[in-house]
Length: 79
Image 1 (cartoon, helix red, strand yellow):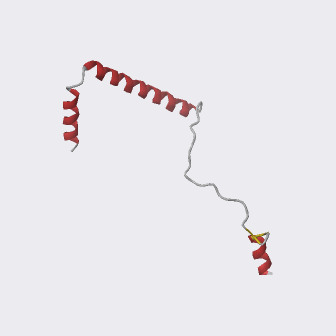
Image 2 (cartoon, helix red, strand yellow):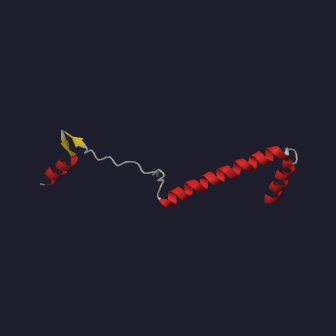
Image 3 (cartoon, rainbow, N blue to C red):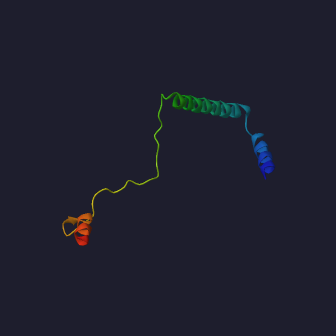
């Protein structure tokens, strides 16, 4: 499967001019350098990336019934 993909890519590249391939390789190298600079800045502590957590925020407002928080109603029922 991988060998078939490799052969297909090589056959497609025969139709592309050399200057286009050079430009693509230059862009890939530029992207690699940028990524390495960002990684280095993160390791040195100069840059802190935002961390997105998938957790939802916990609702901290009390549940109310009859004008009182539910926790007070439970405490009164236990008395």
